[in-house]
Image 1 (cartoon, one colour):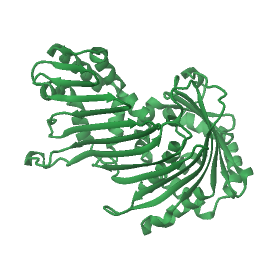
Image 2: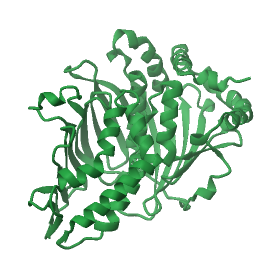
Image 3: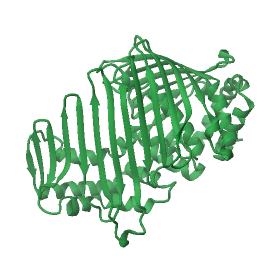
Image 4: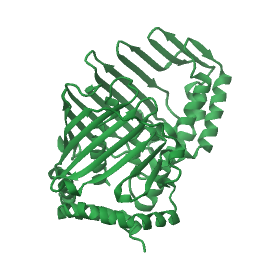
Length: 465
């Protein structure tokens, strides 16, 4: 599992390199041409994994990724057209197009012939749940790196809050009845919303902590009334650049301070019934040179002096620390930037990783990913990416809707019959189109890929009669 997660993070690192978040401030449409090369160091892996990861290193080290990314901040539509090019034979390249909006995206490629795969992203966690049960493939971890998945899962809970409290712009007080109404709405969502249920179940499957996850989430309405607001109502105070939400006793629960290009907010809630302390703080700054920095600390842990009644519970469900320094808020620009991510707790593979990079005003970019191989050990460079990301003239991004995709195969709702029919239609262009590409791959790369396809049952799924 961990070796695949490393490959996943490699892909995430690439997406960072061409992220539309680096676009100019609020353009109607922005577009970037990119040309990137990769290098992976397999020597840092443990002996039992090294040969396998060497195959992936040989694969990445011989590839170039070239294309265009166009993005509309207004519609959140993207259109990514790219080629994966073996540097030994550019004519054996494989092209693809990924396009759509956060809810619905399509993937097309000559490898699929005339077919297009449709991703209904609200169902990604449900698909991850089934993928883990059938293939033991940790797709849910990759899905969590796509913020839309979590946003969509918690949308109805957020909507219930916003109906009652979202339009507040001045100091105000809310009654106990308002909180009871919110608690009832949240209770209904938690019992009815399948998207949220699959988010909870999918995250807890690999670590077998579903009971704890379910308990914490389904106690949320009671926690709101009996522990966050044990008496009376809730108060909101807006004083210039400072906003504070507090309970009847005046204890601050959420504080936000904004101004001068910075935003700082803190969430500090009382213990849950299980004894966990939810904590989250975020501070972001955009300086006068349009460089962005972020510091995030979050945890859902038992207190250090936990009592024996909690001895059977994991000490930490999740603890996250992210520090980003001097990331370019516009692209291209001169910047030396870095980021460090530390993840702990039982819900996510514990890891420490860091990214450092350099970008220039003419579009050159260089990124290096380092990971912690041994617990408490030093960080070692595992992956790097170099190339160019330069502005291009956009051809325009249409406002995609669900109707643009309904005629395609919905990959997250695939059935045995639709899968078999789809594979029958794409098998010929897939194998014909990929043969030239495979001819350029080192034997070790082919072996590593085939080993994982077999280990996770993908070959059995594709090679049907």
